[in-house]
Length: 479
Image (tube, rainbow, N blue to C red; front, side, top):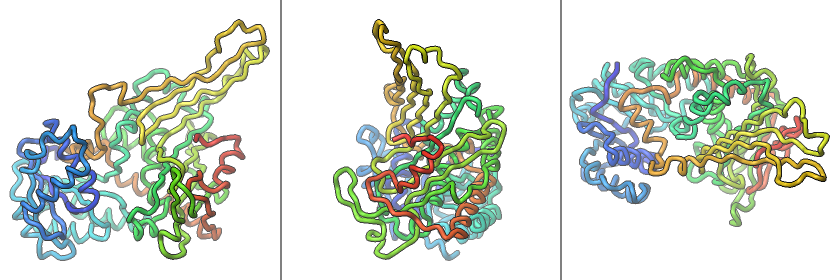
């Protein structure tokens, strides 16, 4: 059902995500006049607050996490807020919550930012209180399970109350401008798509590097590890967007149909095609940091780094490796996609002493949003000792290219799309399950082979085996 909600119900409204992302994003939408004038926002969590207490909580969060230049509508935004305490593990409080929400004129959008263990009782409570009707849609924050089996259990619980067209699974990377620009780069420019295949591309690298360690996520991260925290969702979504066939049009069904084809075409990864690591004490930006086991307070075999050589077995990508790399306590924070093109088939400059370097496209996602394409150009000179060629970058810094445009938080777009009912940037159930199926097979291989994480020093680019994973194919990681 297509409707713009006039009620937004936020579960986990006093949590870290709400403070850092959700409330600032909604307030920014308010400042730009993008929220339905009738929209009311109801927060709920275990915290014992009333409406005034929640507004004070939200004000403090906005003062701390929202840019100064976007706070012009804080008072107006706070007037939209109300609050109802709730223990989601019991049905007792859901009727009071339904009374607080009231009767939407157009529809209700719900955002679950809670532990996955609370998804099922929350859905049952929503059904019990009449908050799961046909004019209600639901957004789910990851993680959606710890493997395929638990993911199916969560999705089954959600599907009991919300059909697929009213279920919005969030991967916040899909809300980032540069990720969306990847589609524009591929499908709005004639120069790229004819070359976007195995005949012209040598390999693709996808890196998600973090400088931080556990940062208060001790229990979650030690259970998840790098492959479930990053690869299963963010990195596989980036891979799918790079590798997908052109959709027939820009709508949710067409785009997600093409993404799931890629995910289903992923080849089973051999044990020689993966490397895992765990950081030890070292230095980040000159500051000493402890090792993972020191931060955790115990020994653990959880991986904080993983590198994978993946293949998409279809006509477009046959023989093209996709190198995935993610880890904590790496030298710098960066998320980027590198598309390495093949060499020209014949160099007319070879007899003149010129050396050729293949073209390379680098798409920076964070912390800087930019696109860089390297071309070969002739160095100035009279060439009496031969022709000299060198790489020349063509750089597009997105903030500079669009002066006057706010740099938006990814959740601004995703929350607005949830309110308005656009599923294009949300993940469908078959995508999630294809991702889990691939990741579960890798983890099963690790278990069968008795693979344990190799140690690496904090501040390095991971275990030396990860460098060798690429270099034995003649590939160097982009650093």
